[in-house]
Length: 340
Image (cartoon, rainbow, N blue to C red; front, side):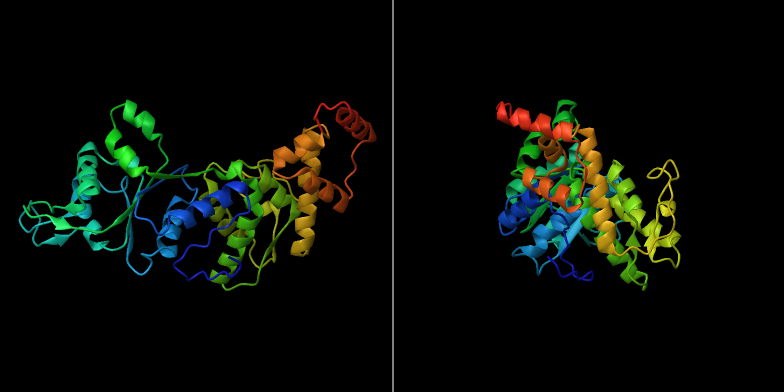
């Protein structure tokens, strides 16, 4: 996990949150099985990366991984793309065409945005899952296929079933194994790792020296909700590297207005990464303590640390905690209230 090979097909998944480790554990448990996997999460959370990780870590890694976005291709073309067609099956079918599912034989087929699939194609997909065979458009013969299916969506499929937009029987066929990917705003512990990963990745691609990021810029990143999730963060890092020019530091002025709406700025700094990280930690913990009225148990829970971990950071950064609040916490502990 520590060696970054940006040309490797196997996706490099980044994180240290509990949710991240749960996903990693699920990937390792399902990678060598044949059961369909259903991945649910908001746009930009990395659903396709998880699908690729399942494929490239598993027994099918030497065969094809083919991905199709169901919402990106018109329905009248999608059927031919998925299942193929015979010559003369319709106007413009000038030759036999192998469908993408057939091409993925022996490998993995990833159906992204499965919630956008038409009811007609849902019926054909259900038959494929049940019979392990396909029939090209315009043909009578069936062809056996050995494909591992992974699907993903950002839609609430159960709500789509209630509206009559999705087949319940297909849903239960696809979701034998479910992986739910939380949005970035719910796993802020992963933010700093992702920021540094993307900076290193794009600095390599741009053939430039490693760039650092200022503490205030990191703080603004941490306070932003990231509605576009990891994809938005990735795009923001690319933008910042462009606007930072020849500087070796991403500063607040380089951030998008939506992330830095007040136009905050600070003098240029040559802080090294460890200094920037320490300053970010100090600000992050100090603000969390203030929000939680210096209740250390509540603070630890909010930022995803143990109490011992929080105490270490308070001591490390010499953060002042009002003595009155410390006394209150001690009283709560002695009274057995568990508030600390």
